Picture: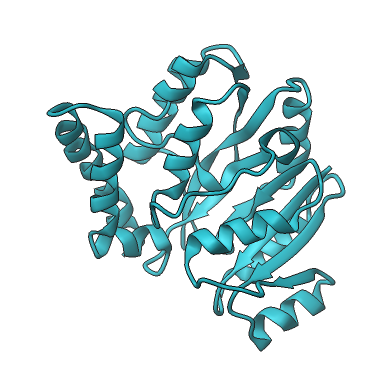
Length: 264
């Protein structure tokens, strides 16, 4: 019912760890790997752990194409794109499926998350606290919301939905694809698009995955080279009118400070 697809790129030193975390799930799930950059490192790990590897036949060599190709590899009802640097709690699949199946109209389901910096687990950074506050404000005592207003409200001040924690309902999403308009905040843009569609967002309030902070992650690289800031400004302009787009963009930028400091 659930397929984990790991979009792999070059030679991540953390890839084996995410594989082991998926192999340790409390229920049986299909695990696949996809790549646009095939190499012996990726092929050997796929062979070692008996994981089918899909090689993109027409790669564009960008993260959006990689994610869309990974989604296309899954044939089950549900799919989670397991980022190659992150880790999943052993009961992620079981708890996510248990909640999602209560709401037949679910589009995406997601859990909360913690961050991992070397051996340190971070649960209380400023960014995490803000996201948790907004999520609890919107969901209150509910597990699912279907109101378009509430779904959009989740995303008015930044993306509160952690991309690696999202489980897609491919049956309800039909031919969903990430837009190539953004290369860093493609997930925020995708959730905002889905918020305007008919269907529920399901939130499991436990932290069921760990997002790894390190200098070579797409997020940190995007912040350091200002691409993230430019895309944030564009997204806020899509959501808010002037001057609120400028104000919230500036405030959101300040929230990066924790992650930059922690990744160094």
